[in-house]
Structures are given as structure tokens and as C-alpha cells.
Amino acid sequence: MAIERTFSILKPDATERNLTGAINALIEKAGLRIVAQKRIRMTREQAGTFYAVHKERPFFGELVDFMTSGPVVVQVLEGENAVLKHRDVMGATDPSKAADGTIRKLHAKSIGENSVHGSDAPETAAIEIAQFFSGNEIVG
Ligand code: RTP
Ligand code: MG
Image 1: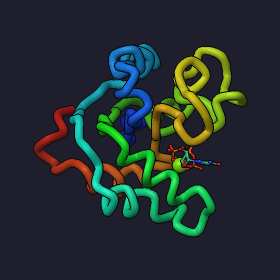
Image 2: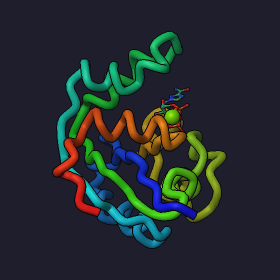
Image 3: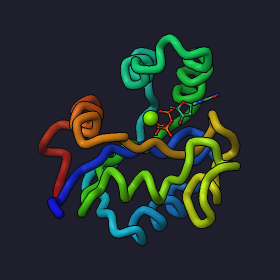
Image 4: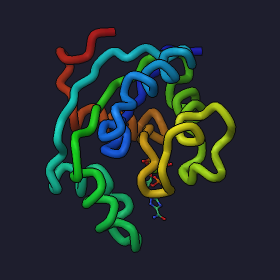
């Protein structure tokens, strides 16, 4: 299995409750390495570009409001099968449907304020990483 990278966000509901360390512990315990990380405040433009795929969905406005409501931590994670491994440790989008022990089961507040983002495929991971990091900020 090849080493892969994925893009992760600790969302405003997680930074607000001071959960970044608890979530990073779960990420690392799952066998993923945090090879880049920074705390930023997303602009509406950045959030809109990031979630452009959901532009026509009824929750898009709410999603942009939420993602810009407080600081987020953007990360690059590295490991074997990183995309799927990360989605496993995140759990289902809706925390009431997330498996026990997952980040969203343990920490998410709702389907909207669900603590974390993770890329859904290696191709989207590459695009998302490039939106927030330059090559020399990633140290594998
Ligand atoms: P993400 O992209 O953030 O990793 O989450 P995901 O793949 O599990 O879910 P996705 O379908 O891509 O939705 C993106 C984010 O939009 C918000 N959402 N709100 N109110 C709603 O019904 C609803 N549905 C989705 C969530 O914050 C979700 O993570
Ligand atoms: Mg998604």
C-alpha cells in the first residue's frame, strides 16, 4: 500500500471547545502523521471555493457561515491509505450515525457542526492541500 496524503480541517466547533489536541490524538492513534498544520480564520471566499461542490445545496449558506464563524486548523495527514483511514476515524457526517470511538461520535455537535473535514479521494485531497499549503510547508 502506497503512502498517501489527505487534507483535514478541525472545524470552528472543535477550536471553540478547545478540542484540537483531543482530535489530533485520535488522528495519530489511527496511524496518521500530521505533516503540516496551521490555525487560520477562513474568509468567505476561501470557504465558498472550498465547498463549491455544495453550492446548490440548501445548507451551503449555513455551511459558509459556520466555517467562517471562528478559527479552524487546516492539516495535511500522511500514511498508508490515508484518505480512507482518516474518513474511518472521522465517522459518518451525521454524528448520530457515526460509529463508536470515531471523532464525530465523540465530539460532533450536529450534522452541520461536525468538528472535522476530510478529503473524499486522493484527487480531491491534492486540490484541497494546494488551496491551503505551499510545498515547503509540508514536512513528511
Ligand atoms: P466534509 O466534506 O466536511 O469532510 O464532510 P462529509 O464529506 O462527511 O460531508 P459532505 O456531504 O461533503 O458535506 C460537507 C459538510 O456540509 C455540512 N452539511 N450540512 N445541514 C445539513 O444537512 C448538512 N449536510 C452536510 C457538514 O458540515 C458536512 O461535513
Ligand atoms: Mg465531503
